[in-house]
Amino acid sequence: MTWGFVTCGPNEALVISGCCYTKPHLVPGGRAFIWPAIHKIQRISLNTMTLQVESPTVYTSQGVPISVTGIAQVKIQGQNEEMLLAACEQFLGKKESEIRHIALVTLEGHQRAIMGSMTVEEIYKDRKKFSKQVFEVASSDLVNMGITVVSYTLKDIRDEEGYLLSLGMARTAEVKRDARIGEAEARCDAQIKEAIAEEQRMASVFLNDTEIAKARRDFELKKAAYDAEVQTKTAEAELAYELQACKTKQRIKEEQMQIKVVERTQEIAVQEQEIARRERELEATIRRPAEAEKYKVERIAEANNKRVLLEAQADAEAIKLKGDAEAFAIAAKANAEAEQMAKKADAWREYREAAMIDMLLDVLPKVAAEVAAPLSQTKKITMVSTGHGEIGAAKLTGEVLNIVNKVPDLVKSMTGVDIVKSVHAAA
Image (cartoon, rainbow, N blue to C red; front, side, top):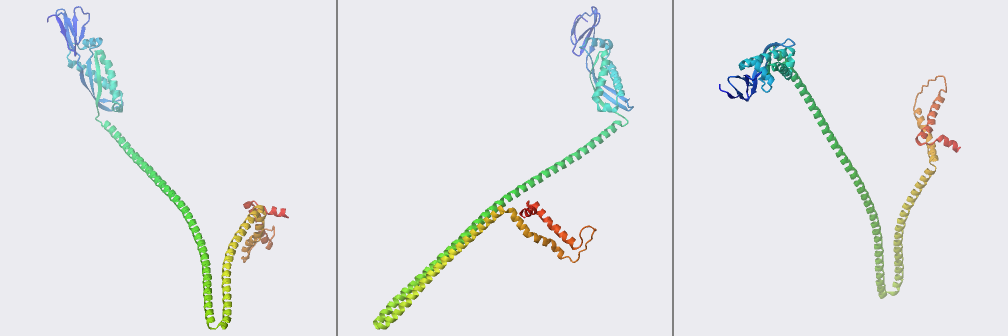
């Protein structure tokens, strides 16, 4: 070997010892100048080693045997000079397989120790805790050898007794139970929501029915008001029609009377013309006898004319007087009723209490008669005496009088009028 620079890759370190060095000179992933005659150079691997840590049939703290498989990555720490120096002291000149074996045995021992301090449930349910404990304990031990535990993961847990299967079955049963409970709760919630939805639907239906009923009520009220108005107008129209019919009939009668008068007048005129014609005829034939007859006819015609005129005037005056009399009678009746009601109202306002007492005194005998009426229908009365008070007919009469005596109290409670006090005051 010639002198000069020696290099190494980033996955290894140079260990130079010999002259000028009180302790080995370590060069991780770099180069160094050496003298072959006075320096010795060695190499140590810094590669990461993957270890499968098997711990078969280890008894846990409960005495349950289980088997655990862990995966660890370890390497010699090249960045820390003290750890690299310790690794050189421990493993320099050894093969990588030997270093791997030492680290594996150390990890397997710590893994078994941690398994013995925990329960199956803890290892099975909290793998992170188990891995952390193995990592921490193994790291504190391997660091003295210059080896760093990069990572540790629990890969598998097995048992030959079916303990884990039982745990799984129990958990499966719990999950199934929770699933059934969840399904039942979901079904219950669904039914509750359906009931709430149905309740809301029914509330909407009832609200809609209520609004319809209100609308129908408003329609009926408005229709009744319109019907009342229409009926009022119809009644007014009918009354107006009847009044107009009466007026028309009156005018027709007047016209008929006028027609009769005109007819009678025309008849009289015709008769006068006939008389004049006969007079001229008589005058042409026999004057003197005709004069007598003419006088007679004139007097008869005059009498008939007067009679017809007087009858027409009498009929017209009678119709007019009848209408005036009916109108006056209606007005007089209405005035009399209004005056009677006004006087009655004034009397009631002025003598309300006295009038009520007078009416009650008039009715009181009838009340006594009504009270005693059932006794008149009684065929037989059996009375039992206690030895005190009246007996016989006097007792029965006293009971009737007691009932009648309660009438003033009843009137006072209903109207506020004290009949007894008012009668004494009047006396």
